[in-house]
Length: 535
Image (cartoon, rainbow, N blue to C red; front, side, top):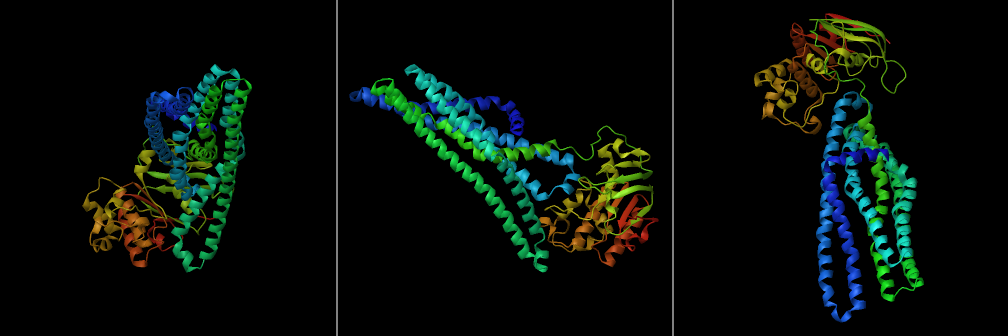
């Protein structure tokens, strides 16, 4: 529940709208109670002049619609404004935690959090806060009114409201709370699994892995359905208990009023008041089943917002010129793992040279680049530029200084030119064409009908992996960083395109410092020196 209390604080700027929603909701509920009371009073006390009661009845009936609409409008105005704010906070958190969080969490789970988990919070903002206040106020006002008839009737109604609006939801929450978080986690895992399956559909078909994948998907779906079934069962039992209590307390009101020797008209009016006033507390009690999932979604959201970044953003740091980079006695272990990937590494990267790092797969080559890019801090030792620790260098300045090409090139569903301009938004068309030539991709681009304005498909599936890699290299060339970090850049290239890129790198290295990691010695043939990394 602490997660919901934190989310509740966000309402502060919209307190006026929330107050309006509560007032409209209370007035709307009073019209619901007043309408049958007025009608029964007229029929039982003055049936010959019942037409005199028609106007109050019509007014109550007419007002109920606008009041109900106004309440829901205010509630949803609050909800959608705050959901937009929460999405901004989540994306800010992802920006703060990246890129490490993208390696430690599944993308499908993050997508579920950004979409369905935040959508679940609409139940809290639009259908929980004001209904709680409305139910509380009505539960005070109606017993006060009944007390005018008899204190016993007021106490009896108050007991019914407490039972339906507090005790039953409390018991239900205690039973179903863990199930709500479990459902949200299972949905996140299922989303990630489906996303992975879609990305790897070709491989699954090629290697006949589809039956096993479908079976696993079926098992996860059954587990999710089982958990949701438990929540639905709990919700059904809760609703049965609620309506049983409503019937019991309505009948009890009739019997108590009869035992108090009240007039027949008063007995009927008291019973009608109680029967028609349970609406707000029933709505409040019925929220529990959905609220358990909302609490789970809120907890996942708060966990993300509270997560500490692996490295701290340096805003007021130093801005040294680049002369050399050094890793001094560096040991590093990835989060949530035990064995170090790198141990007591010492490496100096001088300015204006091509440094090759050679090692078999899985020995920490890529990790060295991530440490140089300050994706992580080492466990021990230091990573420095000009003997200045990366922890003391301005983060934006460091990003401007470095260009990093990973093994997996991400291209957006946009034009080729716009994808390249991520490296330098102010780049001219001539500069874009130059880096495309240097990356060996210009001939392909210029053969397309729309050339650099060609729009890539989703996940850039319309081009090959080698073409993706060359576009990523071109983007890095366009960035104009002094230190170029390249991770297995020729892994998906044929010999001809590899030669084109290596030749371009030799030219670029006259103005930049280049670090290439690869398990292929042919890629490192242009290196001025090669560092052999061992386990």
